[in-house]
Length: 97
Image (cartoon, rainbow, N blue to C red; front, side, top):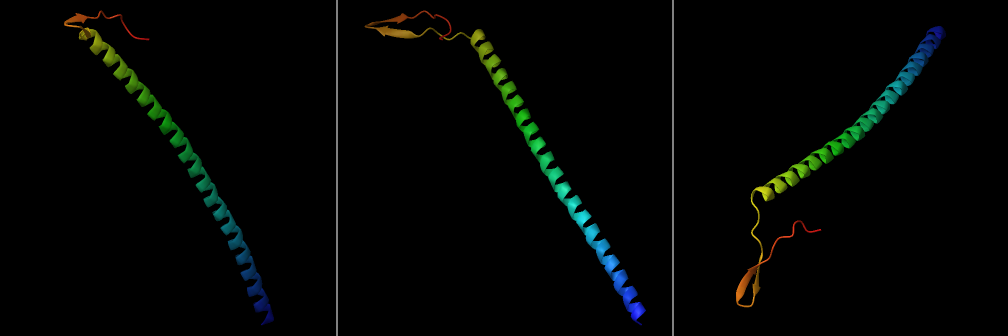
């Protein structure tokens, strides 16, 4: 009877040791997974910000070219300065600095 008790106690001890060690491995694997997910999220955020910068720069360049093209095709009228009783046109000098 004592032999059966000792055999059961020993097998229970062995199973408990195995479960605890495998639990530690599983917990470690889950922890590593969360670390990897965090690193991937950080890399994705960096790449997303880079892509947003590229899109904003491209849009700014497009708007600039469109404004230049629009100004070249339809020149603005020369400003008029009221000089007493008669209006005088002021010549354009080009782009302001």
